[in-house]
Each structure stands twice: as C-alpha cells, then as structure tokens.
Image (cartoon, rainbow, N blue to C red):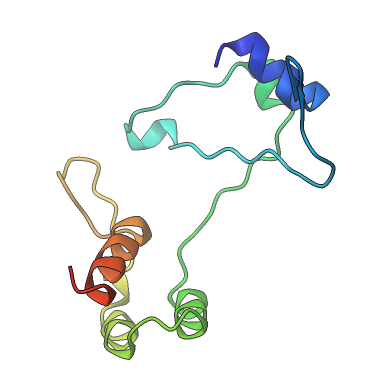
Length: 113
C-alpha cells in the first residue's frame, strides 16, 4: 500500500471504490525504533491520525486472561513461578521469551505439534 492510499483509508475510511463498513476501526502495530527491530517510520501526518499506546506485560493480567482462555494450568503455574519469562526482551538475541513466542508455543502444545 502506498502512502496516499494509507491517508485515504485512515482519513476517508475508503480506498478507491471500497468503503469501510460502519463500526470498523483501523488498528496498526509496530515495533519501537529503540528496539532496533525492523521498523519503518510512519510519516508525521499519518502518525498524527492514530492513538499511540505503549503496552506493558503484566503477569497478573496475563494469568487472568490465560485462565479464561483455557490455557493449560501447567503453563500458567510455570509463568507465575518464573514471571520474567513472560517477556524478556533482548535485542541482540536470536530468540527470547515474549507473549508472541509464548502464544506460538501454547498453540503447538495444545494441538499436539
């Protein structure tokens, strides 16, 4: 998608002949520049049309969600015992614990993969 298309979609809720349905929202996610991850800086006029939220990982909130989502009790218990393993960002490592990686591991373990 080119930048003018992004502006049209965000500002006018349409892209060419397509119009977004009422009640739909545009949500975007990106890595922080400070994380040295793959990032592309969003142009200022486009950034100004979004609400920006920084999210923090919280073991208590995650545990409450995990119980409701029927995550295996062993996983919840392990992370309550070692909460630092819920998210331990290391920009120089090839892999590190994160909610994204945890979600992949849970999906594989619950589906027998």
